[in-house]
Length: 501
Image 1 (cartoon, rainbow, N blue to C red):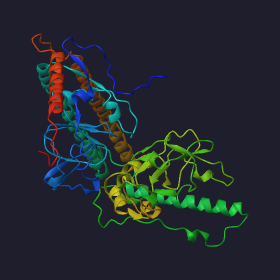
Image 2: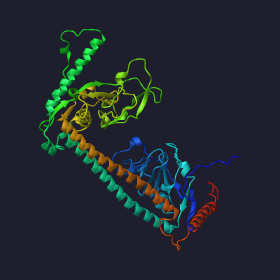
Image 3: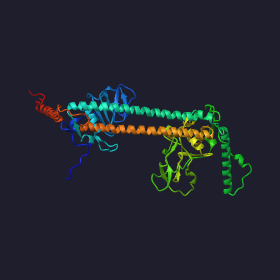
Image 4: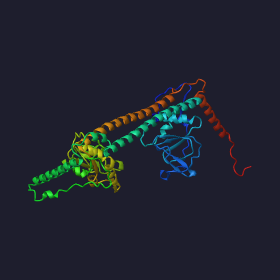
């Protein structure tokens, strides 16, 4: 008969120092999970007398005032998330969260030592399945008792230094985020180029540029109308030019004053094309045309690899293929931070469609206006306008084409637009590079944490003391004590039956 393979946690080493011993998990930890006293997540309070501990990532997940739910054992405890594999060390009384929480106590060893050991075990990853079954089949390396205390002290010393470094990196990252925001704010207010502007007068002030843009807008409309008449073999009727719809002007009532030679404009004034995409549900896999997912668009970025596939249709869809320079706005999104954000299409090599949940516009006069509008629409009062227009219908938060048309843009001269784009590109690129370095350092610190634990439980983190009582001796004492307790229970005289002499 084939021997059953037992899945359990593993270690990257097998050999231990002579004074150490491997010990079964069930001989180290006692499962004291209380299946009666536990609180459902829906009953958590934001504040209260007693903390609720569950298997979630947050150390304390909620509170309750019900002292009848307090765990009855004496701390400290080790909490293990059956689904999440999350480990927590709890040295106070708490209320157990419902489902997936395993509460462990360590009666015969240093509980912090065991806690760190459990953090070092590599358990099989079964997704959101249950993992305690693998943990309880595992073995734990046990050091002499005095060495356990010294190892815990060293681990906490090193982790304290590591945490201080991580906190410094996180503060630096937060400062970079504020710096980025200040650059973008200064750019749309004209403060970023204030000194440059004093030395570089505009070749064409923004109001004049806007006039030229409006003239080009009308010319394109007339060109489009004439083509429609020609395609139908018709002669343009009298007064056909009067049907041109003037673009909406900006409502400057609550908008700030801009620098000299700047002016407020709307997307409607500087764009000649604004359309929704295709509404038919695409497929996850080929064949078909590539069509963008809604999450392809992020502020100032379009990820052309975030695609699904649209069945080859019989009808004409050529007007739905995106092109370099197109601006895409998110029409719907569950997150207000990502609703109405804009990204520009760049380096689009493969024919790619856009879906109904993305609104596509084409800006008049091309670069740099298209890049400038991409940047401006995601910041300042332009962004505030979009957020203010968000509305929820049928559980979806969205904006409309009208909201985009009416978006105010702080319009500046072309040479200043180029200068702004050059400055923010340079500075934001520097910020991104520093953030990447910080993220890599944080990731390295996570690996270093595991390396410290590995050395600790190989017995290599601190020197061995030959005077320490070997773990095997301590284990023998525990076994003897357990046997003695069992013998005492078995020797108890039988209880007399009621009514007998």
